[in-house]
Amino acid sequence: FTESLNLANQWTEGADFEVNYTNRLYDHPYAFRLLTTYQPHIVYTAPGSASFDMGGVGFANGALQATPKVRSSLLVRYSPFNNFTIDILEKWRSGLLWGPSFAPPANLQFVVPSEKIPSTFYTDLTLSYDIKHDFGATTELYVNVQNLFNKQPPTAAFYGNALPGYFG
Image 1 (cartoon, rainbow, N blue to C red):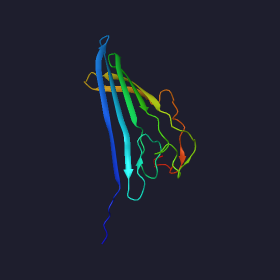
Image 2 (image 1 turned 60 degrees about the horizontal axis):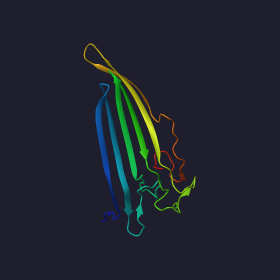
Image 3 (image 1 turned 180 degrees about the vertical axis):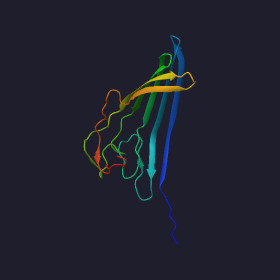
Image 4 (image 1 turned 120 degrees about the vertical axis):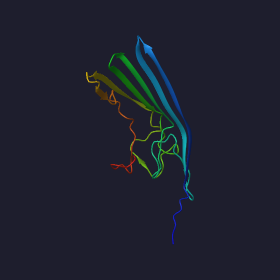
């Protein structure tokens, strides 16, 4: 008779922030919304092995999940005339350490050695136009461009589980 028992432990701490503001500019509506997550620690512990704090880390040992310490999204919406809306989404994340310590973990082979993976941001743009029909329905036409400025991610990779469907 066998029973499984998982003695591993994971804990985290942090805070989420949200700020919203709406108003009118020349009698046309606009809105700002800022979402920020601060998560300085994600600690993994297991009996018989070292504890790892993966907060602010780019790559993980084994199956541990790494994450930036700060992530923010700024959404801006403006309707310069009736039925037409401009949406801009700016996404940012803080810089990352390679691994849970200042040096890359010994069991990972890094492609680009560096002290830190720099912070980065991406901009998305959506233009939409609503067509109102005589029978009461509305059709929305839109164009969405993700990564508007074709910003390349910071160079950071390692040989490991870089297979389709795997994290990393």
